[in-house]
Length: 126
Length: 111
Image 1 (spheres, rainbow over the protein chains, first blue to last red):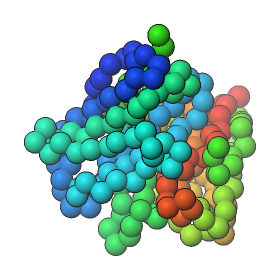
Image 2: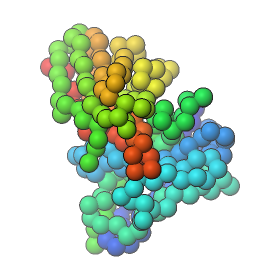
Image 3: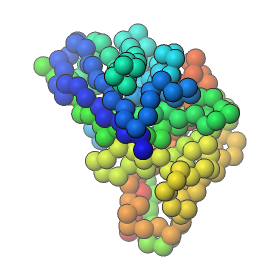
């Protein structure tokens, strides 16, 4: 069974960099057709997709975040990471990592998130 | 700003059937599949339905999904107290070079 676990600072200052990692166990992040993504949820609000990366390192970003966002793979650690800079207080949220599943024979048009980490609360405050 | 619109809330008594709608557009549900997620309080979302109407292993068959045109629905049959949660639809959006979008979310209350 695939398991994902977020890690990183719980407090980030405004204008600085939010960095999170997601460690995957029970499977390889570099397996063909695997995509991996980040989703966030501000307190009391809905879900927002941040971006995803595929097994080859190709990235797909939410357009409003694109200029501040980097998602990368670390195959040696079986991890993928999120860097968002600079951040504002409005980006205080629970950040989830997840496997961005794509059914066989389809592409991202049929995708979904089938495995999720437990979430990591990141507070942006001075 | 989500481009998938859901009713803020829905409710029912135990045993009843509850339906949650998800309204999209030609760039979302008109061309792409829908997935549905259940989020219990203080927990990560859980996949309920993928590829419009497919249930992952372990999801009770009380949960069913459908899609027609630019709209989709999640039906919860035989409502149970443990179904009280937030529910989100989601889809790929072909606009803006492509991105994944979640619906606005619906809170289901079991009366």
